[in-house]
Image 1 (cartoon, rainbow, N blue to C red):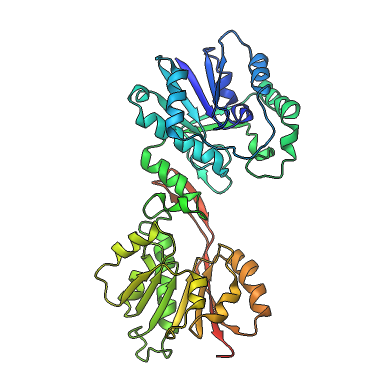
Image 2: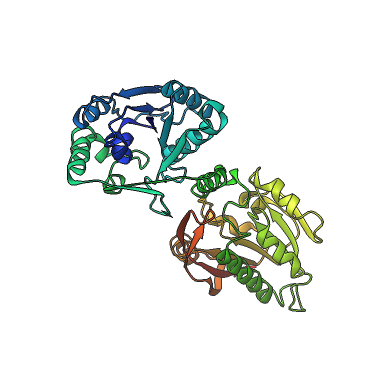
Length: 401
């Protein structure tokens, strides 16, 4: 049985997979260094001791350069076939939820490569938990390193990775959390894998690689947050274009509606909703989810485009859990409304919105309310859990309207 370790860079093989490299079984290990511009395979023969294996890997530790990335599933499938050489093998690679996206992408691509090639279909594949400060992943196999192996790992880092200890790029820096004393591994099915990958892509387009990446449709926490948000909007819009207090007749603009989880609730409360979603992958899902829903339209406008429009005034604009992308809050001055609902996790509200609001001469805070408190919750079919940070609503009213 050949162990094949697939890593982005040479140091990764020691930082996350030392227990595999030094398995008491004493068999041959092959390490695929998958950096796309210089992909190569190291053969660690059964006759090499730990020191010799680490010395060979150390000779391949490189400076950080641009363009370090996964070569993609097709190239990885070829590399895996060559490394296996027709023999039974086990494959070890990065977690799709590794916070360093370069590693997460390689872990995902390696799993896709194994699944797509019938000649590799029988190979067992395990992901290292790796660097995952936001998630606690339930592991299936834990290797606790002894003092000898810990000493070898630290000597490797200090002797071969000194330049990475002070590396400014968080993708490639080596610090204490990147050097685990217990190496943890887990199996995953395709759905869990894709959800883990998408979940850690919260602020880029890869979040849309699965339907409902934030599990709005299945999470009890998210259901409470969305219900509370819809109720807050309904109650506060009474008397602002909605004299009934039920929400009927109020015209809302929901900015960044994603796949419509909140939009459905607003429409059910009787609002007319313009749901905007600039993401080209989420938007067709939003359109399909809201098909046939009375009083709802969908378009691609983002906050900047809405600020440029000279259209009819809305009862309110909703910026719900979407001001994490560095938008210029001065754009709010040009929205066609006198009422803006903002919801964010508490820390982001304090750091992003409060400083801007203190300087603003156009808006005042009418109300601040806790929509849902923080909570720990499982995700990805129970494969991991994390802290949901809570959501605080801030109701802004125009002062110079």
